[in-house]
Length: 210
Image (cartoon, rainbow, N blue to C red):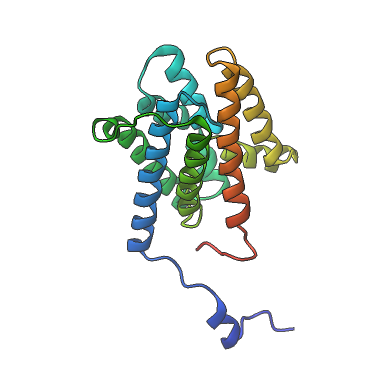
């Protein structure tokens, strides 16, 4: 059987993203992720993954979120390079750097009044989900535990999704030490909305990132 794609098959394959398209996606994803995080911290919420870890450290220490987020992602770039490749690692580094920088600059230009926590949780989840979709579809991420999960899956067979889930359970449990239970509950709603946005809209059988 001939495994070479036919002309018809080749016509159906998606064209690779151009440099301009990747730049637009990284910019959009970075800006929207930073905006979502500014709203999240205004509400006093927490979130999952390395962004959530950086938020918690920021709450406890009073340090700015941006440098913490950049620092906690540094150990994961080598794993990203080994597991996924150089292009992914470089794009992720740019995206993380953009979010870190914008999260420090944006509060000087954006302010919020009263936001009902239910609406805030939904908006944060939707905004952050849209940001991550743009990054995922252009071969980037916001680093962190997802990369570690893939690495451990390769080495041990332990599913990457379980690694992320265990980390987030520990993170939200720790959040009860620095946030009140109601705030943590609203934060969990935001995390649920974010994950629903990703689960429904980022399906490999419907979209192939190149």
